[in-house]
Length: 201
Ligand SMILES: Nc1nc2c(ncn2[C@@H]2O[C@H](COP(=O)(O)OP(=O)(O)OP(=O)(O)O)[C@@H](O)[C@H]2O)c(=O)[nH]1
Ligand SMILES: [Mg+2]
Image (cartoon, rainbow, N blue to C red; front, side, top):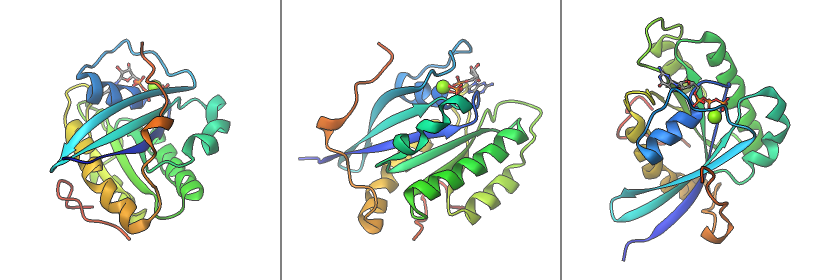
């Protein structure tokens, strides 16, 4: 019988970069221009099939607003991975993303699985060149990918890659043990590894 493991995945990054939209695209297959800013924290989850195993990704989606910053240490506790989101049309959000990655590393250790995600790849007027972000992400030991929650570009690939890498990562790093399903919150809303999909990582 196929096994099942669950992992806590936190989404961080400047407000408005599209964290909630990425989760919504992944879980509900939808995109909305009317999505409201997250107040505090939102939970969602998604089961992803990798090989014979169902991997449950439990998303902790925190508001990017500064007033919620003090929640970060508690929020990051026991996280298996962090998705750090920036907006490719905002250099400021990229600088913020680098700060968020440092904060994640400080809280979870240098071995934390971090994905740097340049969202809104559909927009014209890019301010963050992909090559620059990829290079800096590699230097940070983070996976890198550009996505669009609007068109769906690379969104499934991102979460599929996460589900594929996390079991290997937690086994080898012995960092983030799968969290028992009984502890999971209810959803709201009513050494580095080489990735197969992102060979640059
Ligand atoms: N063009 C485009 N717009 C996007 C994309 N992703 C999100 N948006 C829009 O960006 C705005 C902010 O998206 P959210 O998902 O609320 O951003 P957030 O990071 O969750 O923001 P906070 O909850 O405030 O931290 C919304 O108007 C979305 O419709 C994208 O890939 N492309
Ligand atoms: Mg949000």
